[in-house]
Image (cartoon, rainbow, N blue to C red; front, top):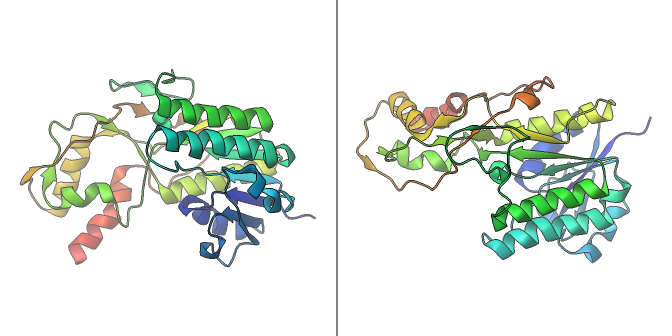
Length: 282
């Protein structure tokens, strides 16, 4: 029986976390990167290519992969960078790679939702079409959907519990003011697990939704998270830190959970406990 073959386009951190999960299940997993020498040796193929340039994708198209995971990033954190990294990247992938693929998994963002006052959002919620950054994300989603059967995964804020940048100032006793906006997050390992489980379901012939939010079970206010972390660290607040301009929404993961997908880090508590334990040991 032919082994299922996944091609990861834009094979960065998330792709390198997905790969070993599927390799362990007997899959072939190939990665496309501008710097293939940085990819894990365990990959079935490491291919050089720039996914924003169609003429650099020919080697990847010859691999004959069954499934494609597209994990784009902006080439710069301005409108032009989003347009190139997401919209132009998706256009190249859609034209060269996607037509021969059984199912595409595309990573987008919960940034696309319009909610800004603390309400709940699900996959059917209103979108912020007027935001040019969101427009680039939605253009990427649409182009891939038109070229192949596609599931768009919209993760919220990605973090790694071993070294969460967001917590560094809190660990120094600095907290936000007022801190009542909601935040959402998904651990990078959980996102990788979600992607691998969805690909396995698809390969088994199961039907999965065309859009899925990837979020933990507990959207929480910044103040609640900071207070919990301070208590876990055994310290008191000693100052304020600059408050980020957050979207203030609560992202529902019910559609994802209904598929039977489990989370290793169902809330910020499990995710940040690793960093807190490390801080207390040092």
